[in-house]
Length: 326
Image (cartoon, rainbow, N blue to C red; front, top):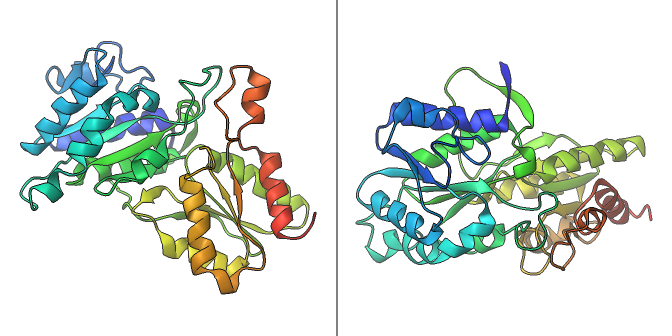
């Protein structure tokens, strides 16, 4: 298997799906002539031309609405938001149209559309451009939501999302686009609603998704030095959520730490922690711990920026608390 970056894995997925299905097209700011703000769409304009690859004005509400309309008449648009911070400008189209069209039409209309781009904290971007907004999308019935942390997962989930007849939101990370990993040469997809156990363990379950996966794996290695055998569950799909994978792991370890880059109040991480507390109550030997970003706007100062986010040290400390090592 070739070792490629998440950026290149996403590019491969887009290329293969555009070649497979002429209804698939890409639109967004700088996706064409500039090859994408993060080079995910590199080379696709040269290969497929306009209108399969469309550069748009700086008007998220407008081009997102155009894509929703295109999806309802049979096309399969892939909307690239330069950042999910800008997706806030398009929320009306996503929540009130894309997510509800199938329901309000009694199943007569489908909206096969993908919304993708970088989400979550980056570096030196301050309060308005370094936010983890996944809770907004997971909250809405009618949307499917996934997040990936490896090239293998990125390619497989993007291909699945493009083929889905429902709107799918794909959460990426600006800081993870260059991460590398093995990707098969042959065709494959990854189903939505299926978590992945990235590391087997028996004493504590560490649950996360997206960019924090690498951090959690490092925390598991640190815990191993302390004699603790940690299991790492990468949720990958947030909606639908693989609850059984979560419960199966917690039944084995009897302890859980949930790691989420977003703020703690009404976050996806707090929802997962509640699910575990509710459905694994008799199996838990300690309360569920949540490691999230602090409940403050993101600072610009890099030292403070790192301090308010989850870290290996915070995850290890939380694991030690549920193991009564502190």
